[in-house]
Length: 291
Image 1: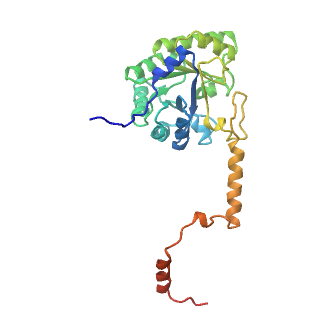
Image 2 (image 1 turned 120 degrees about the vertical axis):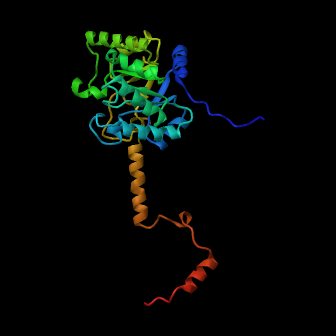
């Protein structure tokens, strides 16, 4: 029996490999909720990252360190319900993989089985080689993350550019090769010099995704709210805002407030009334008003 049902094409890690080989840039954006993910997916983005940056962007914390596994699973569920095509990657939050390999596998598994993600991302270099191997052994794809690793913000002395000195750049290069050899399908390079990111990208077989790392990476990722200009007080150098939704939304809410206060909203076009006969019957059943 033939069927005309169209099965949506879902991106996989093969897309990352193919785009690297074809020198076609990979597009990735963060999303933390159903509506944002639905729009990003409809726009055709290759991948969506459910980042632990939600701790800062959505929860108002100063760092990502307060984000728990339960919070990450919840936001992954919201995003994965909306996505039909994009490859969904979930950040492993602070202390979800640093304690033991067993804990790391269990937590990575939760992001896949409960959260609906397709892969996980974790921060750090060769010191997490055994952790990555254990997660991969469980059948879960892993994306690495080098450079500015926000979970180590206290050790790094703040959100500052990394690998500016040659010894640090050599360490990053060694870590990148180690993560590739261990089996990571891709790497995020965050806040490192552009010439270093370009060099690393050209000397790896797996694709790199840059954020604040110049134009030489194999793809780019930015935070949803930053792309759309939703936070007027946060405009770092590496971000390009493609809209000014902060002002657009502010203007819309101000107009809504004015329309409500002047009773311009809701108008007749936004309202429904009872059938005339039913209204007459209702009024006939009501006692006369005492003025």
